[in-house]
Amino acid sequence: MITTLSAMIASHVRDGDCVALEGFTHLIPFAAGHELIRQRRRDLHLVRLTPDVIYDQLIGAGTARALTFAWGGNPGVGSAHRLRDAIEHAWPQALSWVEHSHAGLAAAYTAGASGLPFGVLRGYLGTDLRAANLSIAEVVCPYTGERLATVPALRPEVTILHAQQADQAGNVLIRGIIGAQKEAGLAAHKLLVTVEEIVERLDAPMNSVVLPHWSVTAIACVPAGAWPSYATGYYARDNAFYVTWDEISRDRQRFVAFVDRYIHGTTDHAQMIGLLRADGLLP
Image (tube, rainbow, N blue to C red; front, side, top):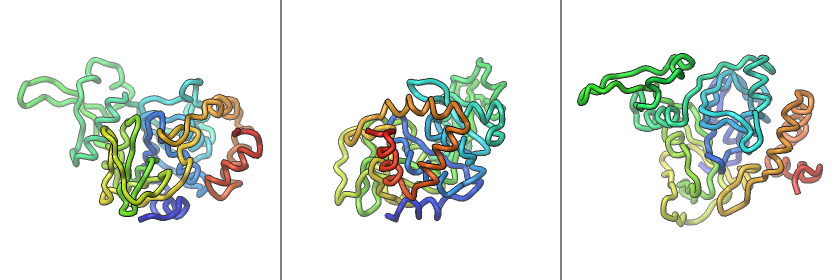
């Protein structure tokens, strides 16, 4: 179960898979996303509540054919320029997309994790999102007669998370802000996790999430695996890089040069961070 990141991606992610990389403001699995690019995965259906810089990189690198999401951008800075280029100009290839609200996508994950065919919510009725997302339907409650919106369950082939710790048995601890990590993880056919460290015993504080070992397919220890996002208790968000990314991602040639040098030109996450530091993109 405990392996290397490169072996984990090579063994468990296939071209054409539906893949969710979740993490809400922090614990975003950047290292795993970079490994998908490094291994040149193609035709992925990417899913995420908030596709930000890592999805900008994945889409710009040509890994994705489709995107299911609720919000997309460079948080605190502006647009996700590679995502926009794919949608508006089909560069580097055409990208289809399905748009949800955060609540709708969370309901879809929850239905998948619960083994149900669809999720139920009120929020979509009376909105124009149904014109953009034809998968939204409705049912009548058998108890009250109320009309309710529905979304089809999401069951990704693979969900990838980053977390603070795992123990030797394969149990995973997530603490801090929790988005849809638990639901996305339990909805998936395979759950892959990178962690800051492997410990003998998890010390789970109140309101944290522990994913039991039987729900986890593989774990890789990747320190700083969420950089440039943050990992509560380990390191802060690298706000300067998000600003720098806005400049890099605006230009196709500059983006390609970045991917070639720092992702394809390195063998792993540690080497990538070392090269970024040597080039002055990291303090």
